[in-house]
Amino acid sequence: MRWTRRRVQTITTWVVVVGWAVFYAVALARADELPAPEAAVMWLVVPPVLWVLAIRLVLRHWWSGTGSHMAVTDLPGRVLAAAVAALPERRREWGRAMTAELAEVQGRSARWRFALSSARAALWLPPAGGWPLLALVTLVVVATTAAGPAVDAAVPGLRVFAVSFTALVGAMVVVAVARSRRLRPRLPAPAPTVLVTGAVAAAIAVTVIFLRREPAAARYLPPAAAVYLAAVLAGCLWIALASPRWLGTSRLAPHLGAAAGVVFAAWFLLIVRADGTQPPPLLVFGLAVVLSLAPVAVFFVPAFAAGWAGRSLRSGLLAAVWTVAASMPLTYAIWLPEALRRHAIDGRTLDGELVAPVGVNLTAALILGLGILPVLGLTLGVIGAALGSAQRPAS
Amino acid sequence: MTRNRRPSAQTTAVVLALAEQPTAWRYGYQLCQRLHLKPGSLYPILVRLADRGLLETTWDNDVPAGRPPRHRYRLTGSGRALATELAATAGARRSDLKERWQGA
Image 1 (cartoon, rainbow over the protein chains, first blue to last red):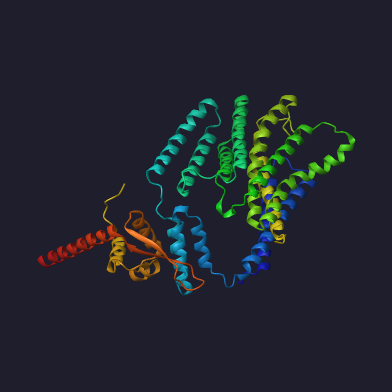
Image 2: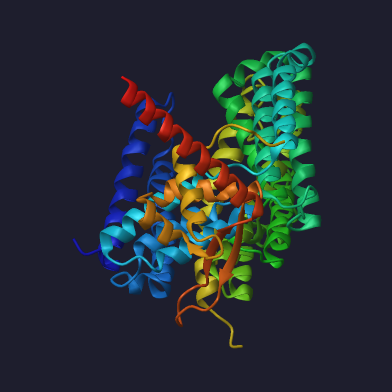
């Protein structure tokens, strides 16, 4: 079967649409309370439309760049290049050596054999780190083992989170040190890094405060949710401290993304605090427009701008990733204290719709702030990056 | 810290192949063909030899247009000493085996 652009687009569209329809139908069937018909239709239609749009734009970008040469593209070379890209810096020379030798290999099957075998070698080359790295691994294991009981004594209910977070961050440090040539890695962008790191610290702090003030809320943080929280926060740290190399090295993108994250957090705080208040009539229309468009613009604009300025999809994607990495912990860090404040007033959840135990807010913050937000935000960012990189300014 | 564990049969074969013409530079693909080794086996061996200072590496920029520079290898002084030692051990083992076979 020939993989034309139209065929790939059609298949991915059907996969996304049918996959989401099935998922949503199952979710509705299992839900305790069904949403309003308008809301149900909106959730059924809008996400897949955005995903299909994002996928089609990326496919178009990719196809116009490299995909049009699919018939003559050297797939073994691409496989090996992908494996070599994962090599740590100090082993990169060996990756280039294998890639260069592949150019000497003749014949389709021989090239595939050489590429696959070399890729295996690239992924399993002897680690370069020695005793310092081994000591670091030992330290991580000890810290992870100690984290559980220590945190459990202070904040019952956070044990799983503490162990997971310590283990994940420790693993990241080990990988970063093993991959880096320097002991002190160069930060991708100091100011955005400090912002995201601070936001992650704030997110952890508010979780501790929340559970200390409301110990019964610990049942709303089951082990799976605790591991998810740890993985998301550790992932944000990873973006801040060691941005993925495959997303490029744009200096503008992290700043745009971090600034957008702050704007989103400010918008969220404004929405929460404005709930129930009546602004002056003249401001109502302006606020309605700004407040409804802000969340879309926050994820779309920085990715579009970075893609446009850097003339590359990767720069736009990097800005989108930074936006999500900044907005998630910031939103979460605002959510829990605001939920405590709101619950103390009238016993309702943060959205004001439900009289429920305060712990319900923890679930809501996880699902909406750290689940749905990044999925939709990244989708909008991908669309912005694809459109921005397509509008290349004249040089 | 260096380990004095005896090299594997494949590592020995690579070292001895490189020692056949100690001053000549060899390419990775050339060694794969010569020794019937897959690159997935050869390159980790070359990496370990280079890490231990037994292998010298350089880039060959004298390649046809459009081709990337090739990485080439030859043994260092320590590598050659190891090759001599391995060759002697292999020779001694062969004669020992022969003697035992004939004495049986």
